Length: 582
Image 1: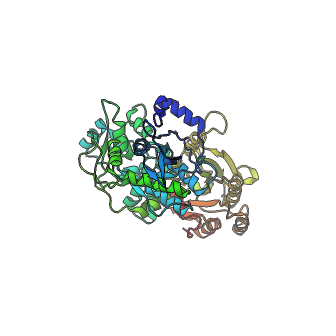
Image 2 (image 1 turned 180 degrees about the vertical axis):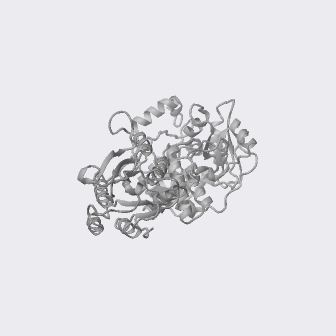
Image 3 (image 1 turned 90 degrees about the vertical axis):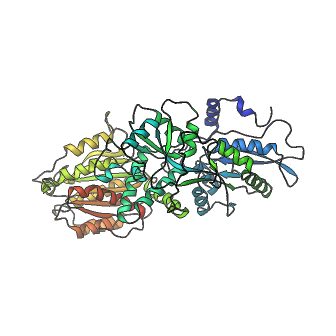
């Protein structure tokens, strides 16, 4: 068999099946990573190495750049480049950046069988993260092999429709309609803007950075970013190919837009279509993705060989391969060859306000906001919640907000709901309406928890004749979440209340004593309280929240509810070092 030619003997499907058989399925805390498709490239025909045993260099490359890297490795191997009197042979494997990162920092789960000798990531943010997390033997610099700007991609017919309606692509489209207090977008907007999963793809990290840059900093920006992360989780995808395929699929979304690298649009366009997918630039300017090569070998001879390949990738022959694969050159000055009609003729305007530090901070923000939630909701149905608020009862306003907020939780969420008032559930003062568990699974029967929770937001009513058992319910709810603590999740007790306890059960001081003694810093459960209307005992509620490093949020008007809800979720950006909030 001739080196470098055996991959053609397998069909793509056969290669995928073989990779799935040999690969390792694992993931980050709530992230599934597909097994890598392993393809070895050793170069063209003939005897490549006439000297003693060659130096073999294994290179892990991100999914979208891997085909170009394989072609480049094949060409490089034909040059018979030698290091230390031994010729160098490079093999390339397609590997998700998260898997490589875990391998380099010494994780045990979801790692490669062998440490690679070189790594082409789809963002230099991955390499900086690896260095911060203790990856050894990484040099201080890397070689940028290719670049590609982020674009908004949609069908040509939809691009025309948006243009006629004067709807420009812009970064604010990544935020959900709930930020504006409504459930659905207008007919003139995309009905979905899908982003790559930032836990897996550099384009996703850059999208978070752009979203953060657009909204700025401060409490309002934190709330908006939190809403974006929740929205993005529901529609994120692990790879660009599946995202672009979904744009072609007309069975679900009517006006889909996806945010992907320009190169992936050009690659998708290689398949003929009557309504092709086209790339559009955001009006505020875009972010240029880089594809850096970093030497990861620990053996000095292999490191020298890996460095030789990195240097060759900067040369004209390798850059021609990269550009013909739809990328821009490593320095960004030369575009794809040929550009193709699906790519805007005008050069993209880069958003200069987003730098490396902003992208790194975006990755940290996502890592704090993205982990799934294990949350028990306590709904106050005492007589206080029957009092009027803006022409309705407090409980009606609160549950309307909860119905909107429910849409911000992805299917990875664990959720349950109790209602509380004195006498409900006997002496306990509360009763379970939905047991804590996976929101996308039924507790019993056929109706999943999400559907049951949504139903309850329209059917639960307050009991005008019942006092509040707030303190008893909080202690019992806190203990329930603590007993069902999930290491991989953010564990919270969300209390929706009028904010008063009528003294029929334990006292405030007794509650605080129990919270202080039972709260565990290594297994933290936050109590987040949303108080509706005037008359809440803000002082007592603040002390309850502070005992668990939680937060109190007060809402006086219906329009404030979503803001309050997002502010509560945004506490993750500072947890567990948040300052007391009321």
